[in-house]
Image (tube, rainbow, N blue to C red; front, side, top):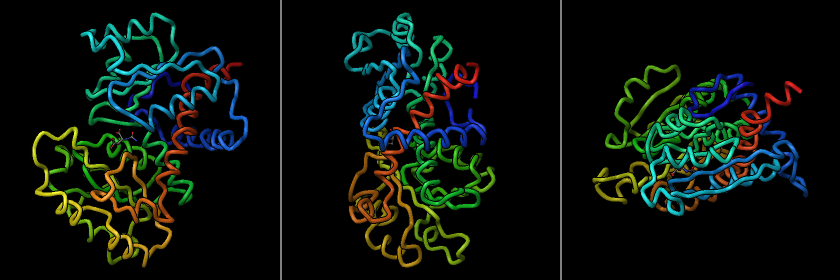
Length: 322
Ligand code: NCD
């Protein structure tokens, strides 16, 4: 694979997604070793430039780089000169003047990573841009689902929650679609993204306002093979998108009651959530901690998948040429 940037999930063909997931499986084996160090990125420098808060994504990119022997440095918006008024362009050009090989960027503006890729020579990896995309999250979700379900061809994944503000949902629809999965997204009308009508033209893609009807479909073919809950992103909400939290949970939360009914049909149903979770709002503790919950598997896969992405962008070509 000779790709320089990972800006959008749409960049990746099915073959490329599968190549990354296969590499991630090898990386996952390394992760289980006592000594987790491989020399693949020795002498390469990876900068994590995060203008929005993050626990999982930032630390997993840092661990991924370190286990591959790259020099990794974290820069956050708050601690950088952007807080003194420096522009994004000046900040990334300054960092790249130090001859870095890759910039992993999270930014509140949709499209920021595409813009940065035009300004610098380094590889740019989108670690979440506004409400637009989060391609490595979709890859780690696909990896986790593949671990649980095997091939995703024809599988039905239901994604529920604050779609309007979710870059995770946007990237997942693309990546899961590449792997042949069917995706139904469920949200209250106020949290359906504008433009969802265009999305609905995709093969195997459906939308619904009715969670119960989607979860307990009468036909076995329509029942979910996995359920992914999304966080209610209060920090991106300027007004009221639902009357009360209690009503949101009643309509769209994965409650203990809903879980019990799902388990009656499919006891090992994988439950995913990208984190961070609002326990008690979009997901009950019983669901988050259920035996079939894949939430911590997603976190574990996050390191392996990001190692695989760094490998394909920074080392793949060199190794193939060597
Ligand atoms: C997601 C994000 O930042 O887009 N989290 C993550 O990367 N694990 C989802 C969210 O913040 O709700």
